[in-house]
Length: 465
Image 1 (cartoon, helix red, strand yellow):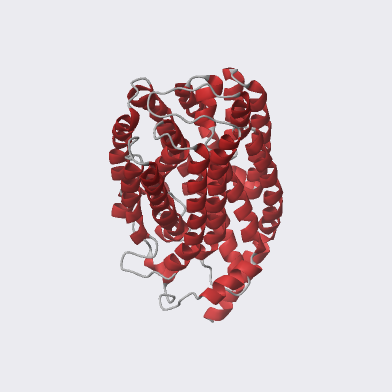
Image 2 (cartoon, helix red, strand yellow):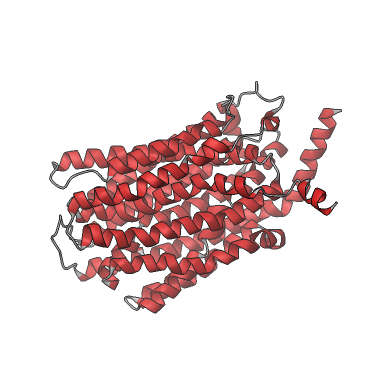
């Protein structure tokens, strides 16, 4: 009887389906690690592009990326195919890897205008088109893949974070070591970069498509709603009435600004003096993985918003430690561990926040709009992520950073060295303080959710009678 009871448990998470679901998340995380962490260095130290020019190009592209987010949620929410609502857009993971490969195939001998145009176009395709659609379909696909079961989705988000972070750590560990062999130590230039990208892109693209091939959507979630279309007027109403969507946007946007800075490679190359040591930061991040196992219990006790606050507070201490550590590796690593804590809830529990925001939409008399609700945080993430990327290039350029090509080396001025330290510590620390403020506001919604959910349930039951 116990076995039958376990088998019929609606909150049970199928192991096979769980790992198939996370396949695309691992693949997409790898794109972020590679492009956010190494594109700027590829452009300045191999292509010989000015840091200011590169930063400006990427910032403009990211701002455009934020605009495309405004349409992605609308497109997904109004999609109804035999494959489902979000699942059809999973094919974008293959297209994103193709453009990532092409992005790093630029040559140092190309004319400078061609380099600028190529980097801008490929970077725009990677993030503004394909990454945008993959982010837009994530929550609608998840809700339908797991039949809207919040308990199961909480487990997928929490335990899934371990898989995503583990995959990200593996790539973060291996990439700089492979880079040191194929690019840095051999002065491989663009040819070394091409070989390096292909080694990672081909298997990770194959892994990324597994979710699309094997995880189906539950059509019953949309029973009776297939003919309903969401119009722009309703989206505008949602943007005006759902003030908590903006709080969540502030949290994700500021976090992505920090990620967009991508200053870690410069810090370990010029401050620490050993780029391969950057991979150790990712290894140390594995210390935090066990925390993900207790996330469901922590969420039940604290709520998601308070997890955001706790993680951001630890990150403030970590970034301050890194600033004063300079090239003291033990202190740098200790600070890096503390600053990584905040990435766990923000990166992996966003779907739960969007579910609450969608329920709040229903409470306000609107459609749930899981995809569309995410456009606010999606826009903030892309726009501020672009600002972060742009800031790195612009501030490095303003500080006198010297770009090089191929096997050339340069001694950076003191002003550039101080700026690199600030980009890797003080600026992220300021962002963490702002995240705490946004999370305090979002926490008000979480406190109201029991009443909101009860009211929405009552309305549905009344309408069904």
